[in-house]
Length: 358
Image (cartoon, rainbow, N blue to C red; front, side, top):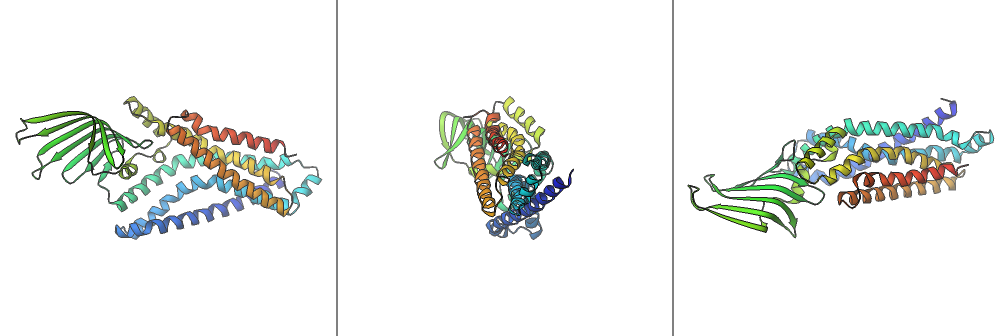
């Protein structure tokens, strides 16, 4: 590596580290003051509270790394342009594309590292932070490592085979009601259910009522659609539903295969599966885009404008990327297309900026 490349790399990692550290502190501070009241009310031990926020750091790092990459590139090359170092290098016959080489290598390395970090560290930390958060919520809802969800009510036990977070639909519902002697009084089975206007509506519903303690007399009713009362809110299910962040790449793939083989909709998980490869790649794209913006100016005003364009770019990317994922969750776009279309568009934009650099 040449002296110039080492110099650019050193500047980048300096400002990349500063931005990453500052954003983590700000994020944790806001999250802390937003949650601390509920932790205190639930009488959670201070050591668990501290552990919860420490376990949140890997997920935060994985989400904000592209922003830190962009600002690190803009700061490093922007300051070089401001101090006329870029102009001096150009006067010495050095091409601007030559200066992009260390940024490109760093972008590729960070893409690979972010993918590995998201696969090895993030799933473990997310699982542990979710367990502590469940203590805070005092949940009566539990879930197995698979899809099964169990809810213990006052005099009832509810089992849900699968919950789809994309459309808040539950499948394979079975509810058993008991009297004070823990004898079965009635049972509800439904193929699917959905939370509509503050009530759970069950579809293809079977209701069995036991009219005596011997279970010989029963009343059986079928309903295509039936409003039923459950001691459960969609927010409870969001907490216990298996999250994509909790599963490494291959585990998520196997989970999708299992869910779909049993006839359930796994569109959200399939979109997240492709997003696991698409999102880290933005580190390379955004580094090239930021470098192209920073190297276009040689004055203080140019640096400020580059920062403004860069921040606007990351905002547009994040909004468009989230919008496409939402379309994928709703099956409007194919899962792979929903996860990668934002990257393809911004890759072309970055290529155009770099191509017109000279």
